[in-house]
Amino acid sequence: MGDWIMDSGAFTEISTHGHYREPVADYANQIRRWKSCGNLLAAVTQDYMCEAHILAKTGLTVADHQRLTIERYDALVAEDTGVYILPALQGWHPHEYVDHIRQYGDRLPHGAWIGVGGVCKRQGNINSIAAVLMAIHRERPDLRLHGFGVKTTALQSGLIQELLYTADSMAWSFAARKVGRNGNDWKEAKTWANRITNAPTQSVWVFA
Image (cartoon, rainbow, N blue to C red):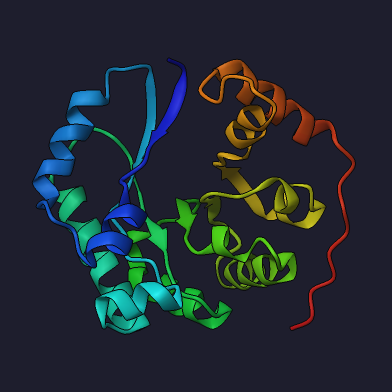
């Protein structure tokens, strides 16, 4: 196993149960267990997504989810796992992501690597993804942004490629399985990533 990021399973937990069933310490123990398997670059914090159907599941507000995301982040950092904890920005409208940056405050030092939640649900509207990323960039151009669950369509945008430092995606696995190949083969992921990197980029117009 090479370089990798550990996912917290946040979407499954919150969308299915409306809360985290296990304490932060249990996730921290999993991070410690797996950190020697390859080069674990980071473990994603246990965030609370802000899509409308998730808010309906929890009965809480965007502000509540942002607060809980930071509380969970602080608790995980305090566990001192020896692995970088990737903080996550949450919101839905661009200004909400900016608000969340300000709530994090000094937790996000200059050049911090930070995840951007909610982009995977916007694949039908690349302009919407770009608007969120640009709002974050205007507030904190120093931040290195990671896109969660970014699909091929978005990654083919030159602007989105420019705004993102890193991204994860399962598009390669879906594409392999669709044609009867192994959707768990790392070589499929590498081939897909090379294709994205070398493909012509698309222009995106963003209207603020």
